[in-house]
Image 1: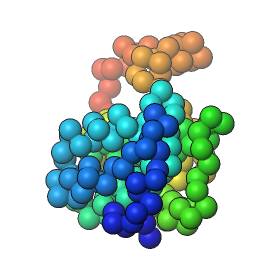
Image 2: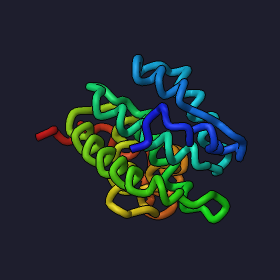
Image 3: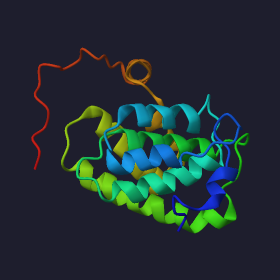
Length: 180
């Protein structure tokens, strides 16, 4: 497993195609998972206009490892993982390094299981949406997971209105289905 002390971190590139070592930020998350400035830095460095790099893939592995030990994971880990994985398939992005492949697969297995557990315990729309994207991606449904991760509410409203004559105002008088 790639530890935060591994020297390979210093050789990896960000979404900007520049060297980036996310280990200081990952260490901050290890001590305080809800450190939003740390998440903001990871979002800014690991993903840039559809570009991801090897540091993005390695950071996903570290985030999955850290997430195993957090009681309330929130949306950032799932959304960032979904973004990295969906963009990994873009031709312009580098392939997953062979030395990281097994850890990356294990990270996705863990993230999928965590997302399934969190889905049963949350009503937070951002967590639900990002966890659903992770589940779809983790189950190999790359196109569906990418759509879930990337479409915002206004794009979903537009799609539903075009294809199903649906409106965001439609049937808002009904309560949501009861949880089992």
